[in-house]
Structure formats: C-alpha cells, structure tokens
Length: 185
Length: 173
Length: 115
View 1 (cartoon, rainbow over the protein chains, first blue to last red):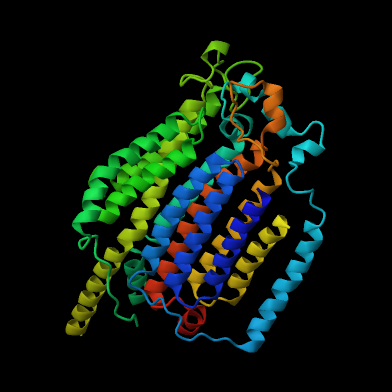
View 2: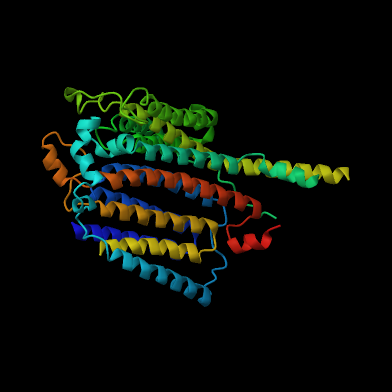
C-alpha cells in the first residue's frame, strides 16, 4: 500500500520536474495537468474521496484556463538563458531551503499514524465520535466544513468572491481606452 | 508594439464528434453536479465539488459550441448575481442561527431525529448551505472562465477601435 | 520517506519560481507548490489502511472512529483547492493583461519595455 503510494507520488515528482525544466509553455501546462490528475489518484488511495472529486473538477477547469491563456500566444521561450551563475544561485537557494525543510520533516510523526492518535483530546477524534449525533450528517468532511468550522468556509467563499471580483476588474473592457484618453489629455 | 497573433476561434472548427458528444454529455454532467450538491452530506461530494462539476458542464458547452451558446444559458450578469446571492445565502443562514439563547453564529438550528439519519432530509441546515455554496462556486468559476476566454475577442475589438482612433487623429492633424 | 517526496515537490515548485522568466511559467510553478502543500496535509492525516471519514451504518461509532482517517485536514484541503483555482484565475488574468500590454510573457522583456 505504502509502496503504491510512494510510486504514484514519485511519478508526480517526475511530471513536476518535466514541467519546470521544459522551455515550451504548452508542454509545461500539459505536464502540470499530469501532476494534478496523478494527485487525484493519490487522494483516492489516501481515503479522501471528497478531495479527489474536487481535485479532478478543479484540475479540468484550471487546465482549460491555462491552455486558453497560452493558445495563440508566443509559447516558446525563445531565449533560453541557462546562465551558469543564475541557475547555480537558484540551486543553492533551493538547497538551503531544502536543508531547513529536512530538519523540520525529521520531526514529523511516523507515516500511517494520524496526528489525532497522539493527543487524547484531539478535535478530529471528537468530530469522528460525535459528528453524526450532533450534526446528523454521515459525511464528516461536510460536517467539519459546514458545521464545526463554518467560519473557515465563510472565509473561503469570501476569498473566492474576491478572486472573481479581481479577475473582473483586471480584465474589464474599457481599461486601456480610459488610460489612452487620460494620456491624450 | 504588439506582435500580430492568431486569435483562437470560438469553437467553430470543432468537429461533429465533439459537438454530438457534448450534446449527449452536458445533461448527465449537470445531473451529476446537482447530485453531488444535494447529497453532499451523505456521500462524498458537497457544495465545492458539485459547484465545480456544474461549472465544468457550462465550460464544456462553451468550448464545443462557442461562447454565444453558453452565454444564452448562463449569462455574465446572471452569473455575477448568483455569485453574490450564494454568498449572501450562506451569511444569512449563519445569522439565522443566532436568534435564540445558547446559539451562536453558524449554529445548526434544525435538529435531526435519529430516524431521519442517512436520508436526504437530514443534517439540519447543511443541505441548504451546500446548495448556497454550490451556486456560489459554480457561478464564480464560470464567470472567471468566461471573462478569461472573452478577453481574446475584447482584445481584437480594442485594437480595431484604437487603430481607428489613431487614424482619425492623424487625419485631423 | 513519503514526506520527503512531498518536500521535493514543494522544492521543485520553488526552483521553478526562482528560475523561470515567463510569467505564466511562474504561475505554473506556484501551482506545483500548491499541490505539494495539499499532499503534505493529507498525508499527515492518513491512517494505515484507513477508511474514508463517512459513517457506515453497519459498524459502531467507536469502531468507526478507530478505523477512519482524519477528516480535519481533508476539509481544510478541500477549501484550499478551490481557493487555489480562484487565485490561479486571478494570476492568469494578470498574465493575460501583461501580454496584451507588452506582447510577451517574458519578465525581463516586460521590464525593458516599461514606460
């Protein structure tokens, strides 16, 4: 089981490496789609069907958005500057952060034992034991989302609203003409 | 300043296959999305997943048969209004719970009897909240997508208009 | 070991953000970092051979609580994924705007053309 999981995540990592290293934008978009769909399968293996459904839907939509943004535009990175100094500086930067990350990841609990097992009064354990009785919903993810932690969901809905609003403002129709006119005056 | 570029056409060269399959599939995809929203508190799914699936049905219509076809079903004004309505519904549902003593913002004020568990009408206000979230997420994502795809046409229109304006100014001076 | 694969995913995204010169490529690298964080959160809540956190009427609640995975990270990741889509759309909108203004996705070109 863990081996299958590790293999799938390894495939994801390979797709991510291809995404970062390719110089063609369209290839990068397609391989980031591979990352997303592989992760949807990983989520199914992690016993998270809710997250897998959302991941597949979101991945489809974000792929369509990214492909529409690259289609008909200059996708090839013409000047692939592989300056030795720049790349080595980037590698050093990432390596330093990775060293700190390894220090943190060494402190993590063993894989396969959820964090709620290590504390007697963990909130997740309470949700599992009394979720059905107090909320009446068998799907405990929904119960957490809409009852125990509805404030979080309210914040999420607000962020999504603001993102849609921001997109509408950035892509509004008469922005360029207005700027042009003010320059003329 | 800008390099000339080819505009992607609005799904006009999509083959018969794509259009036929879209005609068959758009109903089932919508139905699946509505199912996910309504049964979100019993089976996997919920407002977020269902909303994204509903939005993807309209996105499929946009891609296969052009923007005009999907905007007739779900126009931008309707989408932006539904976006606000979903968020307001969610807020009002939370606020309704504060009415009496011992309750708090987002308290579940409809109790579920033991016998009604595992049926559609259970979970108190959760199905209504799921519907509000579904409406909100679907319309927000569809609105964002429409804005991003419509931008190509807007770009072309703007360039034409700016060229015409520049011509006029040149001829005036 | 699986946690370190997750860290690798985040670091690859970070490398892409640092190295890339095209705005859209930076957005895609941020998407990979996003995926890595989601995966990490879900892995923390996983129980070996656990069941999905959906109550099964066939077994008792205590038995269910001892065999289910953690529902809390799943709920948080669920919201994070949808927020990620909204933020991605906003970032792509900025990229498209910049392309329309300067005719390129390249950051250094955009800096040169500014003004």
